[in-house]
Length: 391
Image (tube, rainbow, N blue to C red):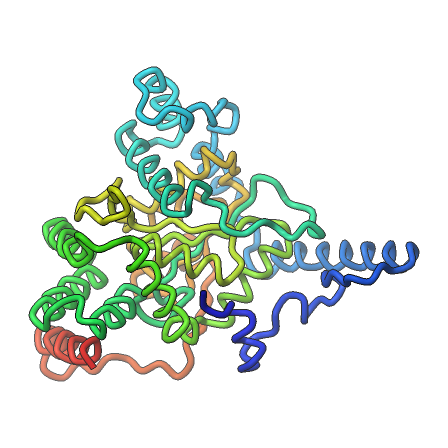
């Protein structure tokens, strides 16, 4: 088991943990006099109140009535009795309820069912419970409120799937030719996200890379890769935003196209509520090479979050979503508050148009050179990335 991110931060001094910033939340094993305990509780409440006020006024100010109304339509499911949907998987008797919930979200029944399959797949990957960390018992929970964070270039510098692939390549999981093809498809997928043929081909190739492998083996490697490579690439400012949500009593969920096992390791180590990711089918502890639900990209993220909201009775009008990519507009557009973090040019334009907050935490970034045209630049990216994965 890798060391926790917070312990690593304490060693490196990159980011203070919540308990270091707010010692009133620290649980001392020695009993305190009652009046000191009461004073600590009062202080904690005051701090939480200030944090909620800061979140509401500075980090993600409330939008206009029209935006809230649109998000309210999407969260009309709160009046329905939802948990029964998850008791019997794909039971025909649930069809009417699923169709009603889907209609309230303005999606089709099939789209909502796909989101449910992703949610159930994540639950199975987590050992039967999507909640990886319990909330701090000293922090009153703001029930029904959550923050959804994209991972790549929002929380982590770079693409987590490529970092994962690099770690697997070092262990000779695949050949150089497979690396080149995989990197090329990932590059086109990240840049456009619009060519379904490329997405399907890339998805099948990624699944083939782990087909026949034991889940325990891949998960153990993912934990090693997280500890050795990914943890140090966290954007401290994004992590701080997530911690502020937790301090305000909100749930925090990662939502990513990367494998759900990797996403759940990241969420668990960072102290977040849980994670949704792309789910590969497992039989008898071995990956089959088939997909469960959909790849969590574009509309796929939206459908998975809708299923999560239905299951957890989340009020989407009070939820927040963070992403760097225009491909996540479906997810960003369905919550009460959207925040563009390290946005690409298209998302930045959309954020300005919609009045969304923009946060850029990249330090000294350089714009890609345009010498030789897009085709040469793309080939250069693939060549360099393939070398980087192999080394």
